[in-house]
Length: 237
Image (tube, rainbow, N blue to C red; front, side, top):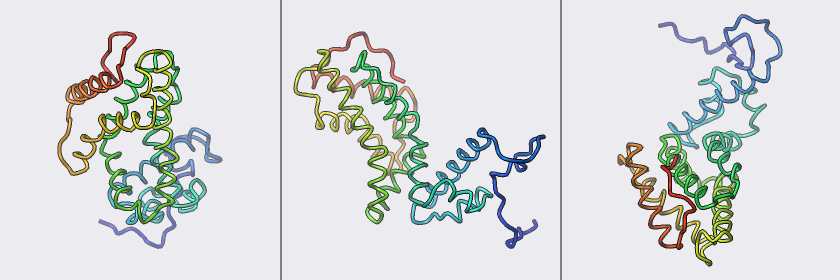
């Protein structure tokens, strides 16, 4: 096997000639740019999960992606910024679900988003990110703060918003639309499954297992807050 020439300059994946398409080389289109952005985030996510935050460098990511460091730095001014972008990408579906909240049936919307959060928390890449935050967060407080501001606070605020709307519409008893209820709900839904998975244990492996666990936890929650669903629950997801 021929050893790679270390003196060769890394390929810049922003160059449209590298896509192997039969078209004129030149300024990349917005579609090319989006594809490259996603590709770089996927490469970075894999390396962060494999080697941890401290064990991953911009050089490694550039080499793995066959891109130049300039390509990365044009998009992300620092490794911290790239790591936060990776997390934002991983959580994009959850963030979009929260952005789409209508408050027409807040208790049902809370149920759906809670199940999405359970599903997300058990994804291998999400567990990898959790491990990084646990092991490296105290060494990089600004990184942890950025993650909390970008992800943790929006999740918590969405739960509070839905709880308040549910209380206003008579779907839960007064006095439960607060931070404590939101944190208890999150802990009950994702606490044990996530913690068990972080230790490498097989947890809620099938969709049926996850639905059964979630339904039981949600039933406990409804009893605690005097929940009155507007319609019969449909399977989450």
